[in-house]
Amino acid sequence: MPQRSTLLRAALILFGITFCLLYPLAIFWPSGWTWHEGPPTSSHYFMMIVGIYATLGVFLLLAARDPAANRSLIWFTVWSSLVHAAIMAVQALGHPAHAGHLLGDVPGLLLVAIVLGGLLLADRPAAATA
Image 1 (tube, rainbow, N blue to C red):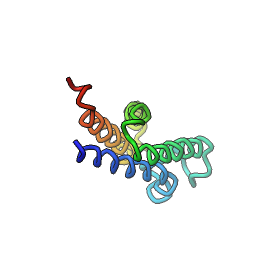
Image 2 (cartoon, helix red, strand yellow):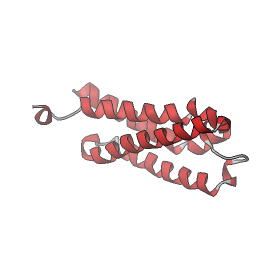
Image 3 (tube, helix red, strand yellow):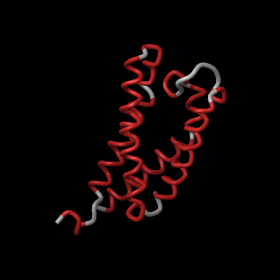
């Protein structure tokens, strides 16, 4: 089990850093990470999302210190990522101009959910699996 805990910590650090870097991702690959034309700062909505994800990223980094004590935050990240990815996929399928999201943030969020959810389930305390 210690190896799974180590993997969970590593995933929290990786995804935490990635969430904190949403703004630079949008600059370098706008078709995969933004939903508007122009620079990232031209959309109040996008800047709000950047703020929310950067905050979540910081908390994921903090959760890496003790994942067992932060399971509810990690589960929130899993489920909110699934919901966000599903909504964005439907919207991208309905608007061909946003098809880049099917190669960018949609699979990225699904990856977050699958990796963190799988590692959480694998890292359950022995008493919870009995």
